[in-house]
Length: 452
Image (cartoon, rainbow, N blue to C red; front, side):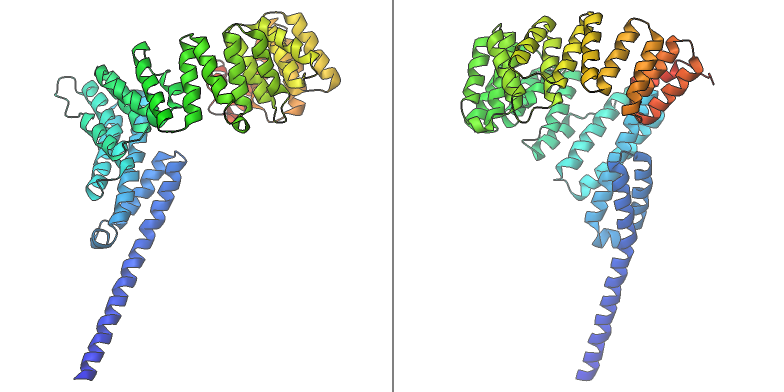
């Protein structure tokens, strides 16, 4: 009897091992397809992502998937919904509101809802479900104007907010949703919460359509909360200073930033001194502002990008004469550089002082040829409509940057000015091939239609 029992146990164990091997084997292919789909999703190749994820979904749709791979099914459904949402967005942006866009959003919602049924506490899935519902809420009445809209994203956003109380992304989207729906009274506490947990959000928030002066007290309160709770304290001080700067309350803005700079000095960066210099100049304290900028030019970490940031402040503020004055101060203190000289040339071009700009650029190239100087010389030639000179300057720059999309774009402009439209189109096409997402280059290529 013991021998029979032992043999039965062995047979049972063997069967269980075979079942487990079968289960594991049946999960391999869906997981491979899932990983391929996820890769395509990260690459923003949403069509191929859907194909791979649908294959994974089919592989998990049987008993094995329901009993042994619910986590796998959740991931597949959630990412499949995400991919279809983006397909709908792309269709909407390229062709407007179409039945196909609506179908993508409907399918995406089904996938995300299935994922939610498996795991209702996942914030990312809830977030995309809310965004998909919002898209359906907007698109549906355009295609079915005489029918009641069955979609309402409000509860979906509120659910996502509950899953991530400190989430920033969902609050951005939710505030936009409230603005679009006319529920503006609900926006102030959302803004305050965002600022309290992420003080740097002020920079982006103030560019939003829903942002207005009435929200400033809520921003200030959020920043004070962040300072009290020691959440990104330096960033909170920076943002609070920026709030006062934007309101032209320069004294408080300067005092706050002085407090920051005099605190933990070893944490001060070139960006901090650029900000302080910009603030002081905006407040009319030029000499103090120049001193702050000069700290940046004299630092060991100075780069042309940082010099450009300083120049861009003066340009946006319409203070090109002040920038030239600053450049003279820097030169007198031995802080001049090619990067600064190039910005001087740009300021002279902007001020329509082309002969002086050309002289500065020729001076730069006399010391050491620089493709950036040739690009600016080409820009001067374009303004003067000297197309031959423009072409020559760009071709010299091309020696230094043979694979530059900008070279091809400027060549196209020069050939266009010379009336050589076939060459202009060929260069524009090369520019688009080198930088396919540049709208300016695409517009230049489209000018020439079917010219060969």
